[in-house]
Length: 438
Image (cartoon, rainbow, N blue to C red):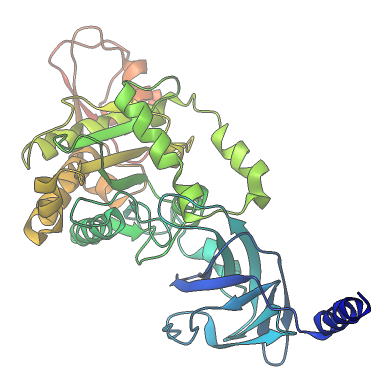
């Protein structure tokens, strides 16, 4: 009995002196470099506690992760396009992991954990925002020009859906939505840039994640776009589903159950790709924006109808009319916007087509046709298209001079003067010249 007691004491002493090893693991590491930020994603075996701090001279970011060890290497990443110049790691006390990121300059770091989803397990996300680039982003494009400056181009914001941690829908043969829509978006950009009086900007021009809120902000505030088109590829549990669809924002309910389900899926992109909840108040505010501006919704519907008509010539349509749903990426009160579902990537036949360069070009041309048709007929004031357009209005039954002036956003006196009218009398069939400068 005494010997048993001695043995128990000896085991306790040995256990106290023995090192405590980490119970969790880092099983993978991915990086997504973007023009203004870099995202690092650690795949963890479970939830983790972490902290981080920055160091100067030289710039570094230190990440301490409790009770984990590396089960994978960290030197396989290509850092050339990122904000990092190097990275290294060390175990601390056999239990905690320290990762040091050598930076190319000052950054604004943000970190948060993500719960498992269909694509990934537990993740720790480190976002590095370029401190030197951020202040100049809002000055890249100025849309408002004085009367002494030259007329500007119509700016089309092209948004390739998903990206980075969010692959979007995945076809039966492994084709990822984020890849094919980026390819189509780049083709559309080429067509817009070749169109006189128009210019395209890419919201995402690489394999990285951008939150839905930031996509709208880039289009509105940074690029000050005239129009926003978001490109996607649909999916459905029934692989027989096929065809293209075009959507606009619904200020009320969705136009169909399919539209509602699709909007829910696309709006969950932030949860899949990873968005910090720090800005949840701002996000809520953006969702609750006033959507009552009739002109924006009407313009969106007009362009959407023209794009849908163009897509009809490329292949079969899923719906013969423009659908409506509460897509968060379309919820800008003053930026006309549409969302195009190019095809069902869940359909094996359409999945193959989406990979085909010639088919991608046809889809881009169909979208370009609708955009061109609208802006040729309805150029924004102060643009090259407006200056080059000879606008005329043929009087039909019920037209009044005041309504015509209001429609073309010019004053009644300007309209009278341009047409040498002494009063408001009009006759059916009469042609009025609409001046481009009020």
